[in-house]
Image 1 (spheres, rainbow, N blue to C red):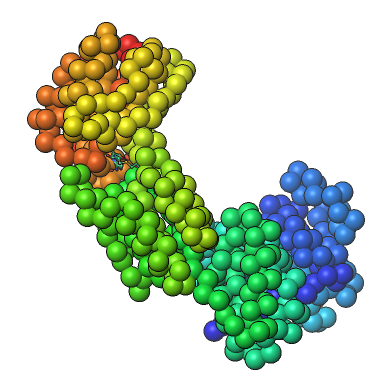
Image 2 (cartoon, rainbow, N blue to C red):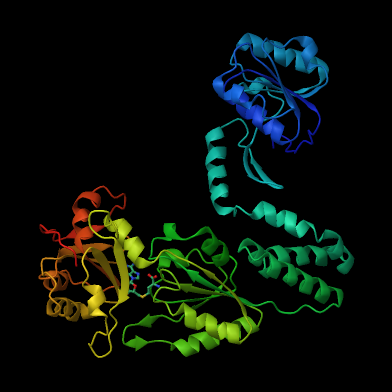
Length: 480
Ligand code: SAH
């Protein structure tokens, strides 16, 4: 290790910044946010720097170059003037007084590195790649930024308030550390990050009292998580966090391999996948299994395609959890209609085409569709049909019977957002033949309405390589 990582307590101490540009302004901001008294030296500070003057009474500006006496009493000295003569003097004077000196972009004149940081105060992550490649540190920072929940800092402050009581309740050092891990990485932390502070508090209270009596209750929980339509990139941060924490995962066939590989490696996997007409596990059995596993103290991940509350029977599953008194949380996901629309370049609403979008399911019993046709055929709306591929013909027949223009544009998006996505476009009159010819098997989303005409223009420059396009015929535009 070339550098000693430390976090300096700089409150009420003096920091000198030489320079008036962007880099200098960043140094000033960071020193101020750590509570330092900052003095800036520059004859002509930039607009950006001038905006900082006056925001803090800890900041002073001198419209001249720094002199040797100015360094006295400074804990940290930053050179950011990009002037080698100024830099050399500043560095030499800092050496004389023992101040820590950093000259921007001049490695041999730096006593320390200014790291890239992810600020979730009081939690702060600092990253250094030495002086070798600052870009690596910046990219890493962006990744950590993306995975560390925004409220993590508040979580630290929140659990910190229980410090003394936990120390009193759990005297053994190792057990106390385990207690903290269970608390932060378990239900209490989850409740807090999900915005339920009261529940987090009562969970910690319960944990403390059971620790004090030496009895640890199993704290099983169910995470009902929407995994989105297939592209792992569309998972939410919370989904990913819970996926990496689960002891056991129950998933169905809409959840692709790319997503499953992101679940904690040693988690037990149970496929409860329901293929059409080949039910592998009845809904009641799934609900019962969730209750049983959570009652054993396990953290159970119920991973669902799309959004769990959108034609996903998520409501039924949490009903049985609620009856059994099992804690659960629901994490929304991107529903197939949104995912398919976005990846196919079909906005579901558009000022010139549709002011309404209906999400319906055409999963009829015995080939008979139980749909509210009067609502479906209204003009200037988009109809997004889930589970409709097998009944596409009945769907088209229904539209015809209710007087809808057979020239109405339709798109069928199979495996939307996945590498094997296929988009078939046509009109009500020919979509059955075209999707038959394309050999579509599903899962597929049917989108009907004049927004589909936008696919020609907006679908062309999508970034998702490897996605197939089938039968683009000229479409006329009329509302459904
Ligand atoms: N809860 C899910 C929907 C479950 S119903 C959600 O919010 O998306 C299952 C239906 O969703 C499928 O029959 C299909 O119509 C649609 N679907 C799910 N994933 C899809 C995908 N990747 N591409 C196209 N349609 C999809």
